[in-house]
Length: 47
Ligand SMILES: [Zn+2]
Image 1 (cartoon, rainbow, N blue to C red):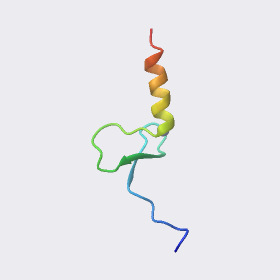
Image 2 (cartoon, rainbow, N blue to C red):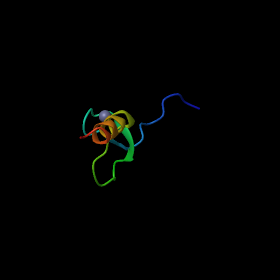
Image 3 (tube, rainbow, N blue to C red):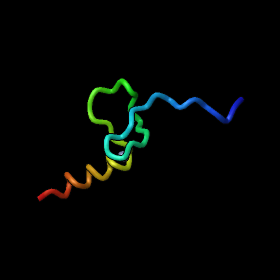
Image 4 (cartoon, protein in one colour):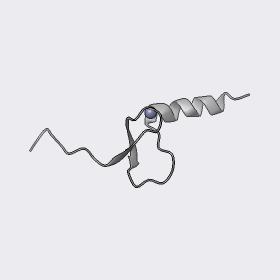
């Protein structure tokens, strides 16, 4: 057992470059949970 697990190949968030829950092979915009939430708030509040 080791505490140092190899970093999973997750895509970076396009906004803050933090690891997301999307695989690197994901086609499209990848957002981390935080940015995803913020984007959702933004679109929800538009208008
Ligand atoms: Zn982010």
